[in-house]
Structures are given as structure tokens and as C-alpha cells.
Length: 164
Image 1 (cartoon, rainbow, N blue to C red):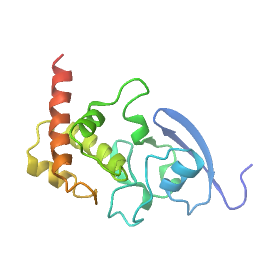
Image 2 (image 1 turned 90 degrees about the vertical axis):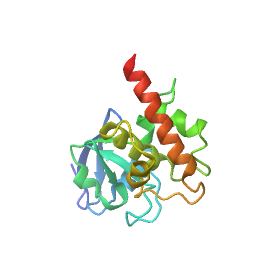
Image 3 (image 1 turned 120 degrees about the vertical axis):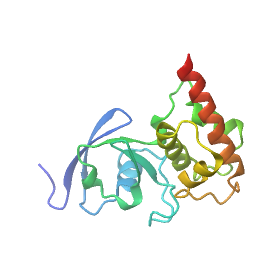
């Protein structure tokens, strides 16, 4: 039985099914972090400007700070925790590490998921295309040069893996 001021939401996060009882006003970022323990999405600006809360919702990149959890009912969600696995980092994660595309790490989960979606659509981007694709993700530490390098390196790694 559902409590009076809550709604049942069924989501699949990184391949695991979850049933949640949430207030209708609960933001997806809070449901993911506080109810399910997925701390990859960060609470930053809460207005879609910074991208720290970026997740993939049914394959689309969204800012989870402006999506209600009830809007995600029945959805497949990917957080940064679902990008790699316990044994090996995803090529995008390795590239960000190797190219020093992160410093404090607050923006990194959003950068990684935005990069993953972008490279699926554009596997051989120019530096300008990379910068445009990541406009919705703000980094206050790196100056973006190493992030762009990391995305280029990730594109090369992914192309090499596909060629195998």
C-alpha cells in the first residue's frame, strides 16, 4: 500500500531494477543519490546549467536535477557507475584519467556520460565539435584543454576496440 503523499516509481538503473516510493516533487537526482545510493550524479546548480547531475534516461542525456523521479517511471537510467565495471574502466574513463581530464572530479560523471553519448553519435569528432558537445557541462578546474584531449583519446580507443 502506498503512503498518502508518495508515488511508486519503477526504474532500472545500470541494469538493476528498483521500486521506489517518492513524493511527487522528488527530483531524479535526489532519488538516485538518497534513495538508491548512486552518488555519481552530483547536485550542483539545480537549474541545468552545470551538468554535474547528468545521467542517461532511456538513452538520452538529461540533467537529473530538473527531471522529477515520477517522470522516470519505467525508464532505463545509466549513471556513471554503469559506464565501466569493477574489473576495468571504460575507455572514456581511462582516457580522462590518462589525459588528466579531471581535477576535483565534481563535473567528471556528467562529462563522461555526455562524452559517451556524443561519441556514439559522432565517433570521429573535431576539437570544435567536442567543445560544442560538452557546452552543457561546466568544469571550474581544468580549463577544458585536457578534457578535449581526453575525448579525442577516447574516440581513438573506441575506434580501435571496434576494429578488433
